[in-house]
Image (cartoon, rainbow, N blue to C red; front, side, top):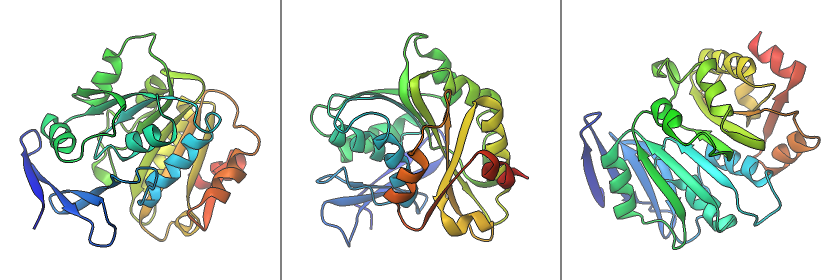
Length: 257
């Protein structure tokens, strides 16, 4: 039985938070019994889910260790990465957009953010809320973690939206998109192409075997408005989880056919 649950009126589903039986001080957020997020409230710098760990690895490359960043989370979940950024880069300024007001309230009630976290919550559609942000507000990282599989909303899974999100990046910033897909990776392929249309530099980062297209899983697409820095691909592979692969340039073109 869940420690706590909440009915989400916007989507008509139930959210639940359960204690992780294997990790002390850790909790799992589920939506309609499907696990969505994992949070270790005592050690928020420990990111359990593989795909979130990969995004955290990319954030680690943005600036020297401990230096604050500005971050925009499109899709809040349990705010795992917001907690990670606060733990590793205190003083960071963050914004989070969530379609479900009840979900954001539920998470913050049950799993409060660490003291000192500077996070502003926004409720609404990710594209609409992005457009409503002040034009001079720029981010070191914009994270999109909303969709997976064939049900990805068309107005978000497209080059135009990625272009709008990339326009909010500060110099040297990254656009990080989590794409969950089934074998064949139709969505990964289409979203990689969309990213290539939207930004000059794109990388795909994930577990090595996923690039065979024979397994379901999550690929992280990373986009930049400036050239891909020397050494970044090697640093991401070394950071794991292992085995990891990063595709850029011609190798990434092979992924998209």
